[in-house]
Length: 262
Image (cartoon, rainbow, N blue to C red; front, side, top):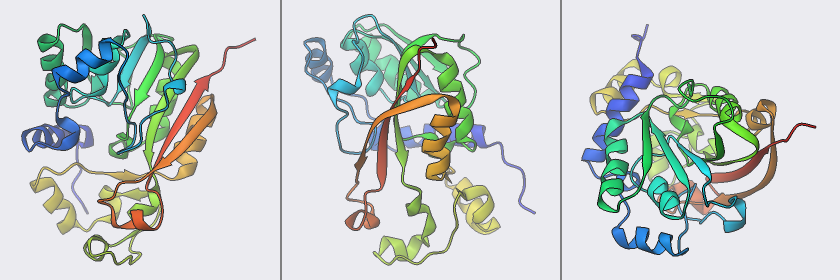
C-alpha cells in the first residue's frame, strides 16, 4: 500500500522548488511590462501561448479580481497596473513572494493570500467581480471543489476565466511520449497518486516534482456548469514542447459567467 501523502503540503514544497529552479511560470514580469499595462498596453495568457481576448474581461477599473492559484509575479501585477483591485491566492509562499517583489518594485497594491485552491473559505461570498485562473488545477485532486468555491466567491454577473489541460495528454507512457511515440498506459481521470507505481511516485516526491491529476472534460467544463456557471466562450491552445501538440491542441481556455438571479 502506498503511504499517505499530504498533497497540498507536497505541492507547496514542489512549487517553492520550481521558483528556485527558474520555472518559466515563476518568473516575474519586468517593470516595462507594468509601465505598459498602466497605459493600457497589456495581455495575459490562461494557457501557454495564446492571449486572452480583451473582450473576455470586464472593465478593470476598480474591479475586484481574484488571481486563483496564480502566483509568480505575472498576472496579478499586470491586472493591478491596469486598474484592478487584485488579490493573488496561491499555495506556494515562494510564488507569492514573486508578486510581493513586483508590487514593491513597481508600487502596486496587491493583496497576497496563501492557501489551497479547493478551499476559499478565507473569502466571503460574492467578494469578486473576476477570477483569473490559469492552468493550475491539474495540481488539485478535486476540481469540482475549485469550481464550486469560485462560483461562491464571485458576485452575480462575475466572470471566471480559466485555463485547463486537455486530459488526453495524461494517457501516454512518459518515456515513449518524449520521443513522439504515443503508447496508451493510463486511464482517465488520471491521478499520480493512484496510477504511478510506488517506485515512480517515490521518485517524483524525492525530486520535489508537483503531483498532478488529469481531470476529464466532464469534470472541467461540466463541473463549471454544475457549479452554476454559464459558459460564454472558449478557445484551444497548444504548446510546441508537448509532443502530442503536433496532432491536437493540448490546452483549453474558458470564459464563464455567474448568472444574475431574477
